[in-house]
Length: 457
Ligand code: ARG
Image 1 (cartoon, rainbow, N blue to C red):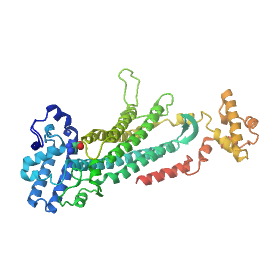
Image 2 (image 1 turned 90 degrees about the vertical axis):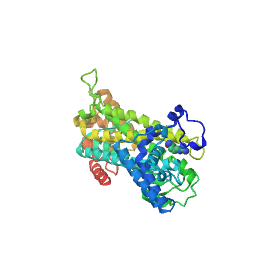
Image 3 (image 1 turned 90 degrees about the horizontal axis):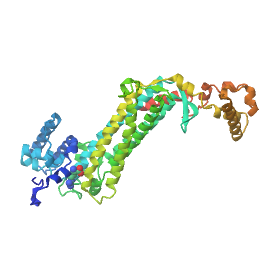
Image 4 (image 1 turned 30 degrees about the vertical axis):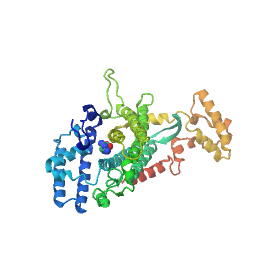
């Protein structure tokens, strides 16, 4: 194979090395960003008098034609030309001749790839924020539609206290809301132009970096040329944010899988979002939820991969950096697909409200309320805790629930208890008492729903 940058070499590149070093098989997906960046660069070179108007016009027209061909799918990518940058530049030279050879004035592939991947990351960040918003919308609709449903709230996966299903779902709106904020914050660090750093030290041409930044919609320019070509922090942050979002999705899916299991029987998931078994005709499996849980692992893998990729790199650009692409591309595809499919699945969930309410009666969920009731009667909390513990043991031995105890039975353990106790232990009174900001009292949850809806809009 002939050498790409021929001058310095006498020998040819080994075919194995060519296949080993090429990146066009994956970085061709940056093509439109690469062209966008090149047009902004060329127009700036023209405005600065570094290229002639005629050269710039030829370059811009040539690049636009190449873009059209790429979009139509009839551009042939050649691995012998190594990467997306060289493929496009070679096509440009083939089209317009010498003017095309002037495009690379004052830049390097090092600041070029950094620019392309930042433009890519900015779009992915915006798309992910959109997906997160849609998902939160699905949760809010779901919570609103099930505002009266009660289920056992758990700690240690043990029944703890009754909560509204809407409250439970709004917890996920909080998580995914924080995720969206993290991506929005990352966008500030992504949206800075590295072009003009050239290979690593800057360039002697009188370029105008601010003009290029404005043309490409960047908020500003990088401050240090060495950092600009060596920095991949924003991709690590991208994968880190994605890993946190996937962790949230995975927790949700784990719950849905449990709730779907016959032992819970809390929900059904719509046919469109479940799959059958090849051998057991009766099965309806939560494969979508399981795959989301499983795909969380590959996103964590990408994050670990990037951190490891970067840890030993001396300043500035090293070819190792080419290995950043595949994990971040895969991460973006994975997280966007997972967010979209889960947002589609949520509205198909049918809730077995009776089963949830029934379960909320098991596990002595009123225990804390009896202790709180006693505190209201002047019993110190620690003592009340001990008394109610003894009541629970008594119930366990007799197969009873706490509200089933008679007033006399209650009083054997806690003489301060009065005739209003049974009223106080009704599910609706238990819920209504959690009436402080962030609590599960129905009026609080209704307020929280409104606030969440408003934040979404
Ligand atoms: N394909 C390269 C990458 O992804 C582009 C930059 C090449 N720069 C270089 N000096 N070889 O990092």
